[in-house]
Length: 143
Image (cartoon, rainbow, N blue to C red):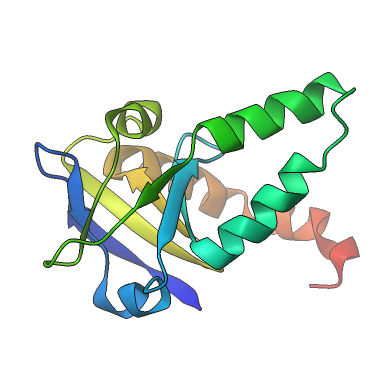
């Protein structure tokens, strides 16, 4: 599983290292796509295939279903590891997430999120400040 928070750097070509313990979980390949909250999501190929199947089966007659499927599927790119354990993120994904030099890789059980360090700091501060309220609203999920 993916857990934890790691600081990394993005080079001028859009390459960044993925933590070594996560590379093992991504050895079959990975897909990066646009995420919610202006971050990127990286899925193992098997997880991505299951999600893509669900997205492709959303009702085509509903505009929000079409929009979300387009957002996730057309924003996706397969990413491969180089010999140094780096992935190359396409420019359109880096632009979408506002990635600069310093990035955060956050492990979220079955996926990774990649955030610009400043954006992550703002998001994390807001979430931590409201954590009690968020937990209260999730009470009905039996967590």
